[in-house]
Each structure stands twice: as C-alpha cells, then as structure tokens.
Image 1 (cartoon, rainbow over the protein chains, first blue to last red):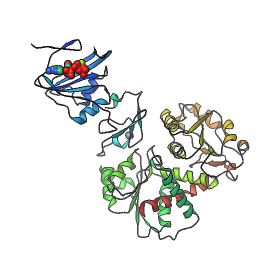
Image 2: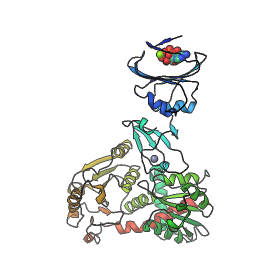
Image 3: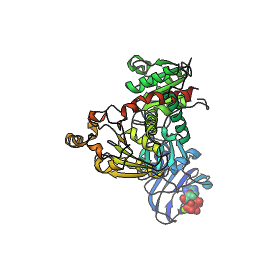
Image 4: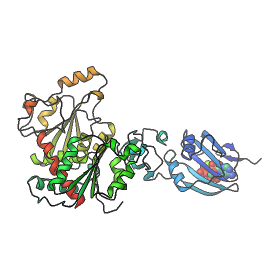
Length: 155
Length: 303
Ligand SMILES: Nc1ncnc2c1ncn2[C@@H]1O[C@H](COP(=O)(O)OP(=O)(O)OP(=O)(O)O)[C@@H](O)[C@H]1O
Ligand SMILES: [Mg+2]
Ligand SMILES: [Zn+2]
C-alpha cells in the first residue's frame, strides 16, 4: 500500500477528498463539528491530533474522503483554525490548495451565547456575528464572544 | 424589507447627528411647536409583548398629540402568539395594518429582527435586557435641558452590571466630547468587562468610585438606578448595601451647584422623597420628556 510521508508522519493517502492541515492543535474535532461530521455520519475521516508540524510546534490534521469543501465551510473553519490549509485531493494529487480567511460577518454558524437572544428561539432567523477587536459580536443582541472564550463551544 | 425604511433600534448604532436632530425636534415639540396634524391619518401599531405602562402610554400619547391613531396588540394571551405564531410572521402581518410599529419584546434582538421583516418602520420600545432607545434619548434630552452635553462629569449609580438603561446611556454619552463617566456600584455589579472595554475603545474616561460621597463633588449629573434584590448574592448583602443606598438632601450638600439628579423610574427607596422638591431633582421632568422625545421619534420614522 502506498504511503505518503508528510511533515514527518506516515499517513495513508486518499484518492479523492479534502485534507485540512495546520489546524490549531486541539481543534481538529471542532473542525469536524463545523463540517457537520459526527457519529453516524457515513463519511470516512482521519483525525490526527497534536502531531509535530514542519512549521514548528504542533498541529491537528483532518482528512475527509470523497468530500470537497465549499467556500462557506472553509470560512467557518477559520473561526477555530485560522492557519489551516485546505487541499482538495483528486486522484491522489493536490488539485486545489487554499488558505482560510476569517470572514467579516458570519451568518448561521455561531450559536449566540445569550440564551435570551432572539436567534435562540424558534424564529426563522440565522445568527449573525461580526468581527470585533476582541472577538465576535452578535448583531442581534450585542453579546460578545471574546477572544478569551473558546469559540468552538459556540459552533 | 424596504431599504428606505427608517428604524430606530438602538442608540448605539445612531450617529451623533441623528441623535442631535431628534433632541432638537423634541425640544420644538416640547415648546408646543406643532400643529397636531403632523401624523394625521397615520396609524401606529403598539406591540407590547411585555407589560410596560409608561413606555406604552407615552408612545400612545406622543402619537395622539401629532394627530395619529393607535392600534393596540391587546393582551398577549388573546393573540395568535399563544397559538405559536412566530414574531416574524406577526410583524409581517401587522405591517400591513399600520404606518409604523413600536415593539416591546422579552428577547434581546427582537426589534432588529422585526426591523428586517417589517415593511413599515420599527421603533424598539425595549427588547429584553437589550436596547431601549427612547429611554436613552429622553435621558439625553433631560441633560441637555440643563446643560450642554459636552465636558461634563456624569455619575452612574446602582446596578451597572445588568442595567441596560445605563449601558445604553453610557454609549450614547460616548458620542459626545469630553465626557467623564463615574461609576458608583455595589461589589460585583459594576460594568461588565466587555462594556468597559467598548467604552474605552471609543475614548470614554471611566472613573470608579466606592462611595457616592467621593463622586458627588465632581458630578454635573447623577443618574440613579434601582437596585434589584435578585442581583445580589444573598439577602444580607442586599440589605447591607440598600441601607446605605439612598440619596438624601443632606448627602446632596456635597454636590456642585447646578448638578442634576436623574432616575429612569420607578424608584423604590434610592431617592428620599424629600429630594423631590429640590431644584436638582429632574426625574419627574425626565419622565414627562418621554412624550416629546417619542413625538420626535415617531415624526422622524413616519414622516
Ligand atoms: N493523496 C493524499 N492523501 C492524503 N493526504 C494528502 C494527499 N496528497 C497530499 N496530502 C496532504 O495534503 C496536505 C497538502 O499537501 P502539500 O503537498 O501541499 O503539502 P506540504 O508541501 O506539506 O504543504 P504545507 O506547507 O501546507 O504543509 C499535506 O498535509 C499532505 O500530506
Ligand atoms: Mg506540510
Ligand atoms: Zn445574540
């Protein structure tokens, strides 16, 4: 079986799918949650956590078979893993490689921490957060998810 | 949603010029400078999903003074809301009955949502612990009646942690030049960190006092708010604080001449009724100012 050597670790190659590399250590599982991949989802996923990175330090890494990430999913990942790289793999080769960018406004990804916020009701409304110097602010109730809080808890 | 639609949802996202325009217009209305036909033929839907006699009555009075008519929601129990209709649907439907909506709702952000789905202007009449722009505007208006809002020291006393009126007033004041905010709050009930930081971002000077006696001699405005028992860790802490938390004529001898005392009302024990007759007591005037301010708001969004 073919193996690729990447950043010093041996990982099995995938034919088609997406590789998310350089994820902030510890956030690999949050990335999966953002992508809506959880128990019972019929997708082959490999998560590597706290592996040494060629760029120094450690990183998490996620490989997803047979799924190519879309632009808005990529943006969501930036919330917890701003340094992530997204490689779309087609026929074992990196076909597209992109970086992620924290969007100025995030619609429908973050759950407002304020239980009394109108976005946490049965109203047909998606949450809207805007980037703030110290975190993300709910456009409806002004609640702040500060940089000290783990935004992954609200995704 | 129409794009030219004008809502008043939060003082925080208003420009200083817009605020000043409303204050000036309120001043004109207050002087009796209106015909009473400004909003003739117009209908205001008053949608209060929470009890609030004063805000509701003063919006209604304001609409009637300008010649408009009122459409009341009636009691929430009797409406389709109890049948499970969403606020979004209610707002869409009621938009077709009126020329503007004033909404009071228990959820924060409800007015912003209403503004997005309504086809007529929406005024936020208070949403949960969130924004209450007409209160803030009437607070500013009352200050402006006594002094220019510039280079003044404003003391904020009471529950500054949960009190939305003081948060909103603090942000509104931050749009003016050279305002120093003095906080006098019980332990654990001062401004939350994110509010402090936001205020510092916009260049407000914040001065924290442990005792009202230290703050009083510096103030041009003292804004007193009600303490709520449930905000204190235990009944003893509340009783201890509440017993010292009272503005009296004796205490006010420490104040500069010309200092004014405001309170969003209703008050409980925090202002001695003996203060009511002093020239510094402006809180009843403040309450009356609710009408001209709301006239200005209605005139602005409907006309
Ligand atoms: N067929 C494949 N199956 C699984 N993973 C792959 C495959 N091809 C590439 N990768 C992984 O995709 C990521 C991007 O590939 P690339 O060749 O650009 O790596 P790199 O040169 O290490 O780049 P970087 O500097 O971003 O780490 C790497 O983590 C690599 O291990
Ligand atoms: Mg690499
Ligand atoms: Zn919110």
